[in-house]
Amino acid sequence: MIVAEQKKMDEILRSIRGYRSVAVVACGTCVAVSMSGGEKEALKIASIIRHRAKLDGLDTRVTVTSAIRQCDMEFLDELDDAPGMVDSDCVLSLGCGAGVQFMVEKYPYKVVVPGLNTTFLGVNRAPGYWTEMCQGCGNCVLERTGGICPVSRCCKSHFNGPCGGSSGGKCEIDPDIGCAWQMIYDRLKRIGQEDRLLDINEARDWRTSRDGGPRGHIRADIVVAEDTQRE
Amino acid sequence: MSEAGYTNLRRVLENGHFSFTAEIGPPMSGSAENVREKARKLKGYADAANITDNQTAIVRMSSIAAGYIASCEGVEPVIQMTCRDRNRIALQSDLLGAYSLGLRNVLILSGDHQSFGNHQASKNVYDVDSVQFLDGARRMAREGVFMGGSKLKDPVDFFLGTTANPFADPEELQLIRLEKKIRAGAKFVQTQGIYDVEKFRRWMKLVRERGIHERAYIIAGVVVNKTQKSIEMTAVVPGMDIPEHIIGRMRAAEKKDEEGVNIALDLIGEIRTIEGIAGVHVMAIGWESIVATIAERAGMLPRPVFERPCAFRGE
Ligand code: SF4
Ligand code: SF4
Image (cartoon, rainbow over the protein chains, first blue to last red):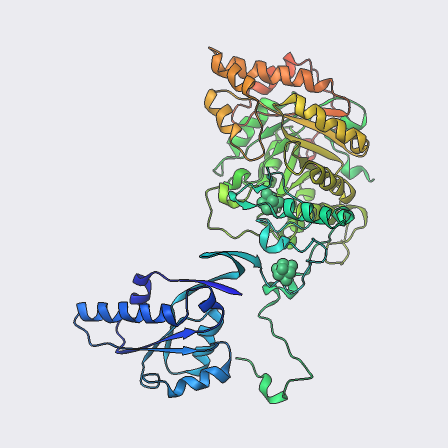
């Protein structure tokens, strides 16, 4: 899932300052699961904004709505009927970066500000603990590396084994981070694929990653031609 | 190989001499005089000197610029190039630049992560890793092609090397990776500074069992510490392993600098006897003046000279 963290309240308050009607919009998918942008969090943020407005003697209107997914226009269209939405002059989106931007496309004349910092594609390891697993590089190599990602989990994105700083299973930059190459080594041995360690992995083609510019997919079997105009 | 890649260091090694190299840390300034001064202290005492590339991710004068200055002073440089700060376009461009200045020894390494340095907020490039860049540099020299596939207009040649850390984990995978680096193009290998000779001996046994020493020259790194603080700071560098008895020796010594030299000489003496070692690489960063003493007391003098740095010859 996409993992995100709530921005500091001070920063949020700064970015909505001066607007008279703020619509706080939660997202019910990834960020709700990573406990940063769901309805619960939205209600809490809204009450802090109201409280702060009162202290400052302002009568800012604050409403809370939730979209099932902010990255899907079908669900954003449902927002039009939500109380306070149409009249708001500022939308505080608690979606990931994609959700915030789709909200911008949905409401081209409203100010839309982010309430979260989108951090990574990751997993939930324990209550309150998420870690990064993938950078969406667009050319997955997990079949070669025993299912452990060298792009996102090695601090130097090495493709041909560990740097000289790998020690006792830990990465040189932080003893709390496991060395990805130690994990790849252990895992390939366990599944009887240690021969893969001998392969020289050639320099990568990063075009499939962000380096090739913003990416998009078109599924010819599904798409309707006039829908493929991108912003 | 064309003549162009024949550096002094390469000739020393190929002629079966035990190599003796040193290191120059470029200044945190644009002072050519600073580099000249360090180079003058090494001239005649070292076969070549590594010029570090923003070591520990601290911004310093570029290794190619400093290497050229050293070569003007008659010290053959080994240009270090890390994969941390440059993508393949910049790395290959800098290789061409180094070649044009007559700098032909190139040591390719991953580089310390920028979180160790003074620009922690910088982007971490790693477009290619050190195996991939070695492969690219070798193909530029051998096949005359860039990594992107187009042809070089004129040939280049390099004497390529890399690093190895005998104390890093997992041991077997580190050796596999070293072999990959050699397959990719490394002809010489400089190790992390050795303090734990017993552990190093065991590692060299594994190196010999795999025949690695027959495919590349293995040069052992030896750090010279001047103070108690310097040895303690070295001890916390990732991948460094200093046995307690050596730290204790330094602690007990009255004259730390003398003891630092004695420790280095003892290490060199022991390392020399290990089968498969082709030379020692002395790292006395900030204490270049001691290299001559170490060369002398270790019986390394006079140094054989096969080639003079290009710039020094006025080419
Ligand atoms: S290799 Fe690429 S796609 Fe696969 S997990 Fe890693 S970053 Fe994600
Ligand atoms: S210690 Fe391991 S995870 Fe960390 S940079 Fe080196 S190889 Fe990558």
